[in-house]
Length: 282
Image (tube, rainbow, N blue to C red; front, side):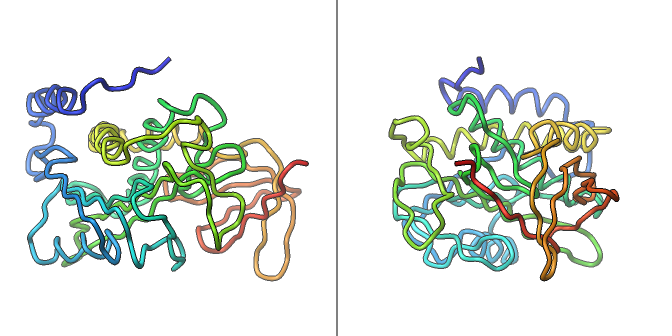
């Protein structure tokens, strides 16, 4: 059984002490602050990702800054989709990450690290059937509990910052205008939660996974952990490419984010080129 942090602030301080002690390994990285400080609570915003990027570009937000919103009027999802959320019911944050110490080739590893951190966090409350659906959605069984959108800032050929937008369904119980596949933490556990406090707990797990990514061979460990909790791994699923669909067995995802499948001939897909056809068991 995993322990729920009794006090976010106490845990964060303890982690910060260890982080500073080991900061020589991150010399020159500019990543010396703790994720979740400052934690900025916004009542309403168009999109936390848009706002966070604007703050970074104006040099008003540094690594570790988190923007939490009760309501997004133009929330952003993957592939240009809109993220719908009932006001005050869910966890909606964007996290500013300094990526200047990472390589361009680590972009998927960062996405995987944030997805794993979210999985680590949700695993405290959801004891089973929790997976990461490629590339970075959180699924409980065949239902979507949360999603992640990472947007990057590249300047002069250097990947300087990433904005990690995370949306998790917390207390919402009805999802009009969406498919029935959405599910919330309240629906899974039968309990109500304080979304702000949960967001602060999540910061603790993002801190741990991000720090792991910065160390030697950290991206390898991240990808290995990601594949251990990969949705439908080893199972046959239906995938659609273009106007045709076929059944494949999910194998693994590599460090560049390519999905490997088998189905007669081994194949690989990049994000955005394939659509999942999820067939719910009756």
